[in-house]
Image 1 (tube, one colour):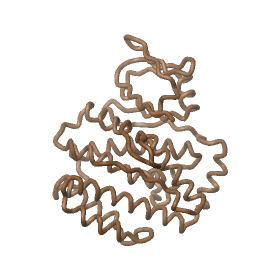
Image 2 (spheres, rainbow, N blue to C red):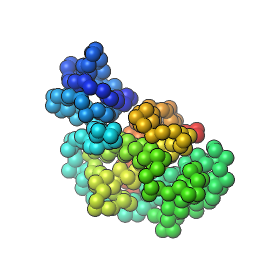
Image 3 (cartoon, one colour):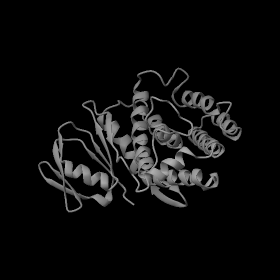
Image 4 (cartoon, rainbow, N blue to C red):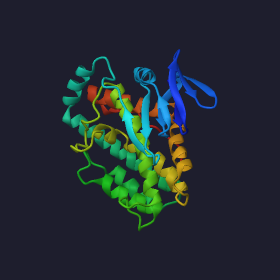
Length: 290
């Protein structure tokens, strides 16, 4: 499995030769494509060849382009991430409704459970409230335990005056981190031959990434934890680079230690197996110590 998230932040030329990414600036750096999971270009002064772009796509390496404010602006996805995309689309359109509800319930329950774990690790008494929520989540979450849990959770982490709809540095950091995680899920959804637009819970006509938005929920907590521990820090380029580096931390999944990027790969595959086989027992969630 590839494991490196390559971040390019300064003026240079990126090109391809003999299965390697060539980075030419004052010096020359070579990185074998088999090592690269994601390439983030965080400079508008980077020159990149179309040959390299094609090779990166062939190797299913996900590419994110940032704008002049260093925020993710666009991404490059393969049109067809699997040889049998038509078959996968038919599967996706015909996923069993009840199975989708069970899968969504499992995702929401796991998200709240991890939120509770993070609060408990930081001696927040609200942890017990979230424990009650995830233990009482019903099929397809008709009582919106996810929404109730989110309010309690964010207020416990960042104070009772905190809301997710203002322009605070905390929200900027959360949004940036979530966008990086979402990019990873977009890549895995497409690589498996499915369509990001067709979600199992998220169904907004304005969201191109409904399915990725569904699947990423339990991984948001990794961003939350870092922002919580750095909530007094200025949100600058260095902070953004640290958020990107969360992809290079390790977690446990399927009884092995894996980089977050590989854990996402394993988890997403297990979700698709569950939906295709009508069995939620196939889902593999990660574990970590907060």
